[in-house]
Length: 187
Image 1: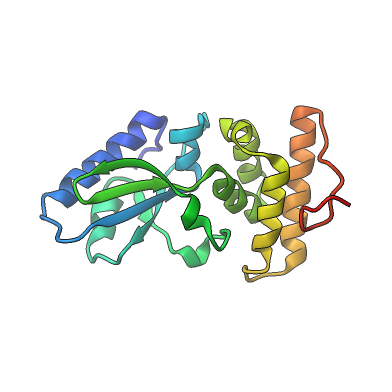
Image 2: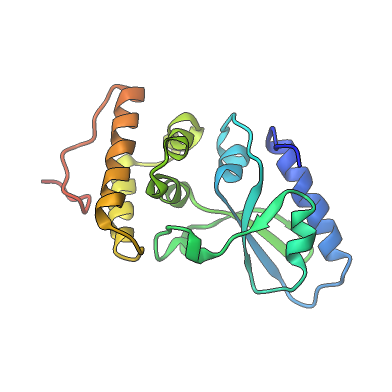
């Protein structure tokens, strides 16, 4: 499958999948939450390509993986994502057609999930997209460190990922974060 270049290609893939799903006459609503790079491309102007569209799906519906997979999408589990425990209270409606509702993580939750991975590519996605202008950095830090206790893995790794993000942010914008402890509270 060729990579998705822009927001229109991602929207078309979603619309085609939803059209096929709706042809089956759903008896209940299905909820997709777009996560990862695709969410940054469609909502926050990230200008890099993405090879797939990652979505979380609720509730379970058998056969969705085939329909989505043919269009470059893959179902991801909440269990592989590092998210804030109340991320669902901040999701934003992106598109609705019939009984299929498509949401995007909030800017804070996209940033949390990307930063926590600790990869330069993911941190750059946050720094280089418009999302950075939709978040208060101190609030992001607060939410990020509230989340760490809910994730499996070494806490230092998540702290180091945050420090890498701070360095990239400071290099890009020539500013530094306020002095805070690891919970986001002023020192």
